[in-house]
Structures are given as structure tokens and as C-alpha cells.
Image 1 (cartoon, chains in turn yellow, red):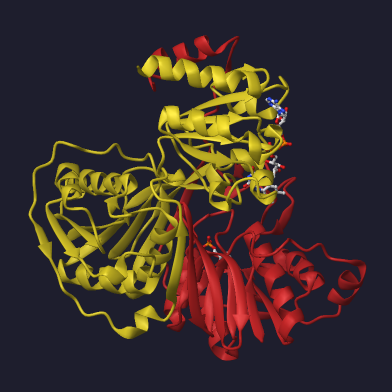
Image 2: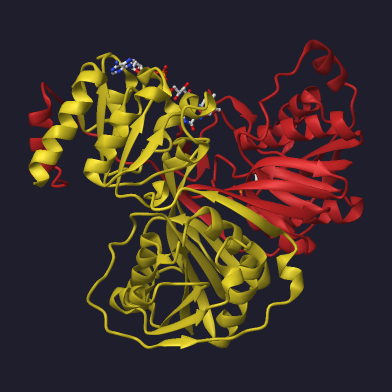
Length: 322
Length: 243
Ligand SMILES: Cc1cc2nc3c(=O)[nH]c(=O)nc-3n(C[C@H](O)[C@H](O)[C@H](O)COP(=O)(O)OP(=O)(O)OC[C@H]3O[C@@H](n4cnc5c(N)ncnc54)[C@H](O)[C@@H]3O)c2cc1C
Ligand SMILES: Nc1ncnc2c1ncn2[C@@H]1O[C@H](COP(=O)(O)O)[C@@H](O)[C@H]1O
């Protein structure tokens, strides 16, 4: 019985959350046995494959069909199910993401598998197969047993460190038939900034709130983000007002992030915003109001005017990095 | 256009989450329950589509009797009838089987759900129902326009969006800014009292996951307030070891 890992690419690069998923599967196989196979779909940069062996993959399969480059949910689910059966897997591991969730759900039905999403740790195996998952948008956790023969685990970001000491593996190319029916939801176009650091994947996030007064003031947020190689986020009113695109909106009704460092600038820290950031390792808050609720959720804080502090911070970080 | 909207009955986003019965149950004391915020977006868009094209909206919840006020609220917002599948929603797969069972009998043109529930946050039920009914499921959907028998959807992706064309029937997991949340008006509230709310039995389903004990996160330590950016950079470098 083996473990199959489904990896995602973004603009041809393997996502770091997928490398975490491979590392998770490798650690799982040390506990429960089973060979770790990895499946990549669509166009993936040649030089990226080596990372999978390093992360613990023992076999790698690639279906290079270009139609799989974007989020064709049913086509991905169809392909994964075929390979899952071919490698005689009993566990599918993937990174939690918008696409991963949508694909995993369909696979749970196809494979008669017990599916747990938002997994935050390796399983306990002493009394069944029990994993811990995050619920109530990070406000709680629950131990969940999976009694079925087949299992799917969608891993939350920052659960498993990326392993780099594995060995090289040869990539095996597969050509598998895709029925027309899996393209029933047809992708007709895409709008995406290229080269941007993806918010859910980022290790550092710099976020701005309504206190910044308008989109014309985002230059300093961008400068700070660039100096830290960070992704940009914002609060809900900021995207509601159209100051920033919706995919930057963080919180209960937006993107949930789990970076090493989250920097919140002129954001009050409403409970719905905190729900999206409570999995961050470290939180820095910059706010002119010492009573802002965000300080209670922060590790480090500066009370003061963002327009004064942020440019100084960018300068200090640039100086440090030189 | 006959639309099915599946809604959850979940603690208000400001609720403090606690557990009882040796951490095996949610402590509901003092908790106010609402329509899940993403489900509310789905319902709001359904109401707009009905205004444009006519037809009828059915709201469905899989839950015990306590969820009925939440279903009534959905009727007040603009749904025409409600179905409650009388069962504790054990897990996403259990819920998906119930929804699929109801949908098979009625043949809806479109099934709208929330992108995810805010209690278990799986984001799974729509995909499972899609597979059970063998129809496309798209999530997270931030725009939905109809052109006859075809729908044009914007699906949010990391760093942007994808444009999708799909024929009816299909399932969408909705999120903002698909529509503005709707607040029930007095007429809606009055008419909701007499709209039909049907209670049906659940179909039996093999259990695929089993929730055991709950746990709260470790409390956060004290915040360190610093006077200037140099001190902050120092802490990030030597205390947090990030820079
Ligand atoms: C169901 C529901 C879901 C929600 N989901 C989300 C969500 O996903 N994400 C989200 O963010 N919100 C969400 N909200 C909204 C949330 O309740 C808050 O309204 C929102 O987070 C406030 O955004 P803000 O902090 O940017 O703005 P404000 O509350 O206006 O706060 C602005 C802050 O900036 C500070 N400030 C002003 N000027 C300066 C300056 N010059 N320098 C430094 N600081 C300054 C102020 O002191 C203040 O703390 C949701 C609400 C509901 C009801
Ligand atoms: N108990 C339930 N009753 C009706 N619909 C539900 C239920 N649970 C989940 N859903 C629907 O499925 C969506 C996704 O839920 P989940 O997979 O739990 O994140 C929700 O936004 C609802 O639209």
C-alpha cells in the first residue's frame, strides 16, 4: 500500500506548499510504511523536479498535457484517480489550496476515501488513523479518525518543514486518455499578475488596512513588501472599496495565511481579520491607536503613524540586507 | 430557473469557541448562530438571479431542529421554500450524500453553496455533490452571470482569476464579491412565516471520518511594544530569527 502525493504548479514552478506535502508524505511513510509516489500535471520546469526527490519522493510521474496547466478540477481529479489506482495507493496527500480542495472533494467520492482537510500534524496510529485538523478558522483543533481503507489528507501550510536530504529520482512520463466530459467546465481565459509572490504560499506577508486612507498610499506597502520578498495582503474594507484586488483580501471571508511573519499596518484587528492570520508564526502590528485590538494578537508592535514608520522600516531592512 | 441553495447554521464570526462534555462537543451557551457568510453570498446571488429570470429558490440545510430559525431567515431574505434534512451533519461526505439525494429528486438548474463552511472549513461539500451527481463543480466563484443555458463564472485563483463557461446544471461554491449580503425586510420576515419548510429524513451513509476530541490553541504570549524601527528589526533578527 503506497502514498500518492498530488503536487501543484504555478506558472510552471512547483509550489512550496506541494513540497511540504511531499515532505509530509515522506514522514508519514516512516511511521506507517509505503512507497511515496508523486504526480505532477501540466507544464513543470525541468529544473524543479529535483526538489521532489530531495523532499522524499521515491517515484515521480508526470502527465505533461498542457490542458492541465490551469484549474480544470474534473480533469485533475480524473487523472489523479487513474494514477492512484495504478500505483496501488491507499493514501493521497496534497496541499490545502482552492484547487486542492476542489479536486480532493471529487476524489473522495471516486475513491471511496475518508477525506480530512486542514490537517496540521502527522497521524497518531495507536488507535486507528487519527489526524489533527484546524477548524473554526483557526480558533480550534479536532482529532479526526479515518476508518476507511482509502484516505485523503489535505495539509495546511506550515505543518511540515520541507525536507532537502532525499535522493534523486527519475521522472516517468505518462500519457493517459482524458475524456471530453472532464472539460465540461471550460476555462476561457485568465487574468493574473505574473511574477507576483502568491499570498497563500508566502513566507512573509505585508498587509495594509483602511487606516491607509486610499490606494494612492500603497506605494510604501509595496516597497516594504519588496524589501522583504513578501506577498501583499489587505483587510476586507480595502478590497471592498476597490483599493486592492480581491485576491489580496485576508481573513474569515478571504485568504487564510500561515506565514512565518505577518506585518499588519493600519489594520484594527477585528476578529474576522484575525481569523485569517492566526496561524502565522510571528505577527507585527503597526497602528497609531494603542488600544487597537490587533496588539493583543501580536508578538511585536509599534504604536505610531504608519506614514512615518513604514518608510523607515523599509530603509532599515534594506540596510540590513546589504 | 430553479436554484437550490445549501446553507450552514454556524456560530457568528465574533463567537468565542469553547467545548463541553470533556471536549467532545461545542459549547453553545451564549453563541449566536447565523447563515454561514459564504452561504449568504450564494443566497444573495440566487435572489438576484431570480429577480432577473424568474423561477424559484429552495434552501436546504442538513441539521437538527435548532437550525430552523436560520432556514426561516433564508426564507425572509428571498427563498421560496426550505428543506431541512433531519440529521446531525456528521461530516462533509454525509452532508453531500443528503444534498445529492434531494437534488436527484428535484433536478435543479443550479446548486449554489458557500465556498466553505466556517465551522469545519472543509470547502468540500460542493465537489462531493458534483461528483455524486456527475456534474461540474466550480469553486471559489466570485462572479456568476447567466446567458440562456450557459453560465459565465469568474473563479478566484492565487494571484488573480480564471474565466469559466459551463452549461446548466452545475454547482458553484460562492464567495464575495458575487453579490452583496441581503438583509431581510419587514415584508420578507412576515411572508417567511408562511412559506413551506419541509422536514425530511436522512438517507443512511457509511461513516468516512469520525470527530473525536476538540482542543483550543495555546494562548498567545504578551506583545512586545517597541519604540522605534531599529528595535523592531533587532527583535525580528535575533528574537524571531526571521531576517
Ligand atoms: C461576517 C463578516 C466577515 C468578515 N470578514 C472579514 C475578513 O475576511 N477580513 C477582514 O479584514 N475583515 C472582515 N470583516 C470586517 C471586519 O469586521 C472589520 O470591519 C475590518 O477588518 C476592518 O478593517 P480595517 O482594520 O482595515 O479598518 P478599520 O477598522 O477602519 O481600522 C483602521 C485602523 O487603522 C488605524 N490607523 C488609521 N490611520 C493610521 C495611521 N496613519 N497609522 C497607523 N494606523 C492608523 C486605526 O487606528 C484603525 O485601527 C468581516 C465582517 C463580517 C461581519
Ligand atoms: N449541514 C449542511 N447543510 C447544508 N449545506 C451545507 C452543510 N454543510 C455544508 N454545506 C454547504 O457546503 C458548503 C461547503 O461546506 P464545507 O465543505 O463544510 O466547507 C457550505 O458553504 C454550504 O453551502
